[in-house]
Image (cartoon, rainbow, N blue to C red; front, side, top):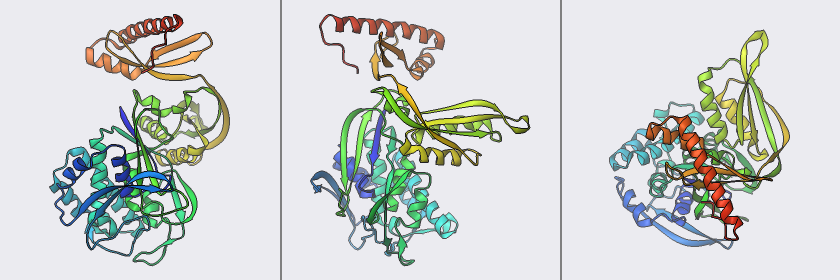
Length: 424
């Protein structure tokens, strides 16, 4: 699986996201070829190599004569009115692939919903201002196109920085982040930066919160890195970073911290639930993992009045514990959680690919004092069973034997003075 990880440590905007994708290897020619399908005229797009406090990055500029509605110092007072239905018609007319159209439409849907909450109006009555301008449409469609052209299957994002001060708008001076941006960042992990600036624009917030799950850096075999530049000059580099890589199994994304092993401190979060539809727990667990939890589990419990219930527990690094708690509040019926710090010890581990009678299979290798041990990923075995029609228990037994033989052969090779086989 090919994954991407955004780090908006210097801010986030539509053109910064585009710049990071181009810097990571996205072809400008291929991007513009797709964008020209939009039934919009009078715009141009260009990429330039720039430096931000000595850090090399790519700046992508969408130029529309007469429009100047986006930059890091977002000019909220300028207007170009389009409704959500107008934007969706533009996307439909472009004839993009279904994933691109759905991603771009989803971003604009989030923008409309955030504005509707702020103005307390129906979504259909919302008229986009700067995010309805041509450059914002190109930024959002371009981000969706870029992720598809780069073959990204899953997107993750680090916590989002928020500045302070005020921004100008048609409603007068508003605090930074402005209300619509804050609505977009609901349930997303954020942190404060002591600078009078709008670090994250509505377009940037909408793209990241729609396409990405917030998490610590996931485990991956790193393939490319990109830096997208903004227009502003801060005491820190006004850039957004993307790293793109490959991972063999979703579980690697959930617990990337175990590679080196050793002792560490994590937050344990728990809550008792006795009034929720049990069908929802699978979704809840997936969402809590996506928020950055290392582990999530359920335990049966007898509640007051002898009601059957569960204890939902999660382990999470301190920096994402608030995001995990916010996710639990959003996805369950609970009205309170418990939180405390625990110590844990983990063994060194690594991902590898082992040859088996069914073809290459992803495995995890754990190092213990007596030597290494390896185990095939469950999802890999399940996919093999589905593909071949062989019973899952038989597949798992056969794969375990093949993996054990491969590991023994690898260890013998290493013991003969030759370099051990590289973990793929």
